[in-house]
Length: 157
Image 1 (cartoon, rainbow, N blue to C red):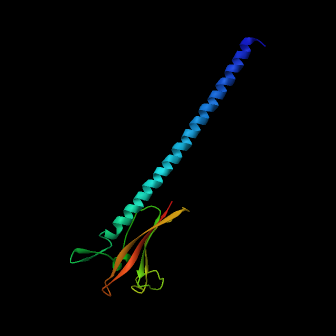
Image 2: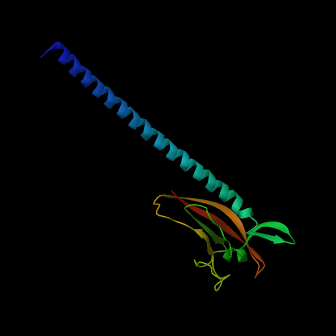
Image 3: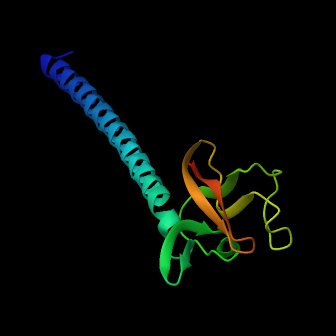
């Protein structure tokens, strides 16, 4: 073989190796960027859950008011008509923790002889979940009583 043919073959091999190295670098950069975006997305969704946990008990849809003054309690009679939408893959429960009642999910027929209210549910097909809770005060207008409760947000990711 001639020296020119050998140089052309070496050049082709070098270009091929450099192309593979550049392709591998682009692939690794893509994977790193993808994992970074996924981490940022999870942090954003977690911030949304914490924000919802802080603001939901004080929302006008749930708060008990006496003569248009908020009383820092959730009106349990309002929990049957709550319309929450576009909250993502979450499940929001309100549970009465004291005094202890039988573990019964509330509906209009068994109210107030129950202790658990499911006010939002959209599980999707997610497998991982995290549960965040905060204590709340529950007001029962039929009996004019306040009871201790727990707002629980189960976040699926």
